[in-house]
Image (cartoon, rainbow over all chains, first blue to last red):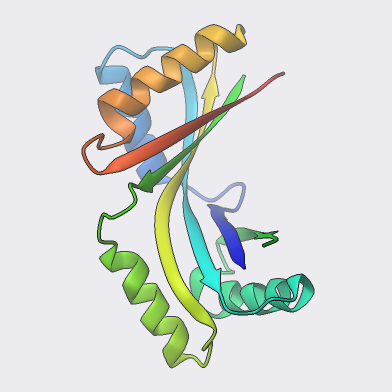
Length: 81
Length: 81
């Protein structure tokens, strides 16, 4: 069973990496970019076959390791099969 | 108009960051993880209002800056409104 996890900075948290990308895009001539936010995208291959249990397990992984809960949000999507 | 970009390593390209996460998860007691791949998730806020033009523009950004086309794939999703 596969899980996809998006880890993004909470709204209001400064994103220097995103700002750097925005400035680099402007320097390359891409003017119409008002804002850039950069997050992480993590794909997990799990042995668990029950979607509910898999989701609970991946949420625990996010809270313990994958996301910094002080400044980041996460979203878990479980892909059946 | 918003665009969401996923940048992931091509299949077959070694992912040391993903492996490090996998080992860290195992060390925390999460045994049922067979593979971890880590990519980037980039959200862009664009002034462009035409979805087709926005998509073309973001694909150019991916090819020039956001993705390393030698080892990475990208996926662009344009969100209307």
